[in-house]
Image (tube, rainbow, N blue to C red; front, side):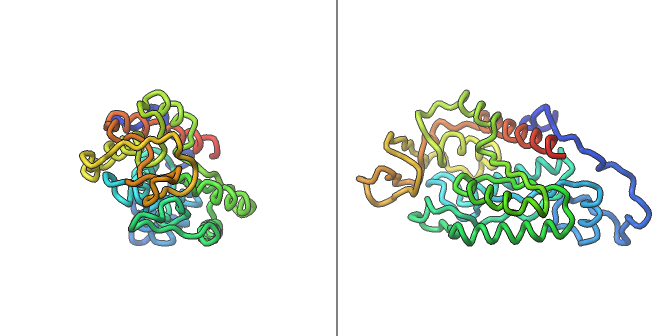
Length: 271
């Protein structure tokens, strides 16, 4: 196995290798890409006819992840996972949605969040267009947490147009099992041991581990991270909840392999 992160299980690739039928061949030649952004519309139509599963990645490009990880941490994870799916599955990947509903991080400069209503409208309209393109199945690849309720509501509402499945990569069964097995931090959830480990495996040059600091207060709950009020139960001066100092590339590789295995299992189930 050339890539140590790729799990042993992979997708059943369906009829991807079916020979082109008369009229399928494009005048300017076939593109090897499985990304909508790289293709012309006849190529997209052809791949949809051949049964490719549509994939819509969601990953913030402007969301704080402490002083040690880039704002585009979620985006980079979505891009990495989408690339691995292209390598192992019969998919057609739409451009990453890089703005979303991330209200917990508004106190930190650079972080951008849409309202939940605006985010839901955005996703609904993108889904509508993917359905019009003729996709038989849509997988929403979600790297966020606060986006889960809105995405699941959108999927349920639009399910009559195209079958939709939301893959919340930080909530996959195998991922959670592996995270629990390898985690050394007492508690966490953002820019923590797990997320920092994943970034060490994906983009080590973008991780400033020397600036990472542990922040694991027992008072921390769901909701907005507060930067300027030490008395607040969700006070998080660095925008971190967890212990990123415990991160390692090896842990990240195990977590990514689990994420991919969860995604492969879902894709095989919905084909």
